[in-house]
Length: 217
Image (cartoon, rainbow, N blue to C red; front, side, top):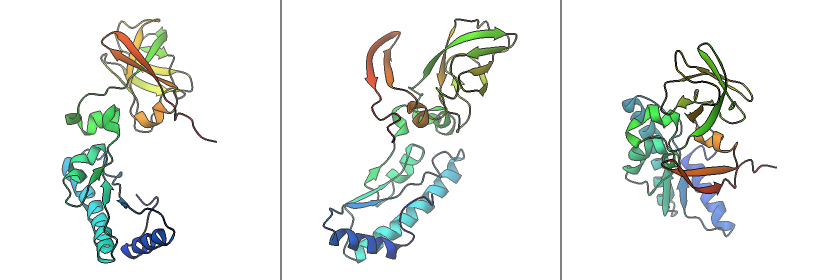
């Protein structure tokens, strides 16, 4: 994804040598085909992922030849777990979003199951075919698209800071109604909150702290 890492197998070997000289415990290498995980077309997603994995394999082969055979070769994401998981040299798959799934994966990989993370919002105003909820960009992120209604056919027409704008058509939603929303991207939405409410059926059975949320200085 052109973010971090080495540019060539030769650079990777030099890094392994530096690690060895520093007395650190070198165990393996990590690749990540994040640019492929949300590609909707399965054939194109597979082709992009395999190209990235082939690059990773060249680094692994070079390390072996230089005497730095990696114990761990890590790659893959939720959208490409099956591609990376069947790649001969990969020993570890980095899939994380599968725990909850989110709106983006619901579209790209519906075969992976239903989303388990939702946000409960309240309708605070209704005017014609529009309704306003008490959840905006301070509660949800929309970099992967607008959130979706879980069980009711509402369209999120927009998010402002504290409010969500719903296009509800002739729906019977009125002020006070509860709306369960599926975030388009869990990772950045979770970071806005302090707790998970764990629900089984209609019962809250636990509250888990989100200890890493907003943990920046």
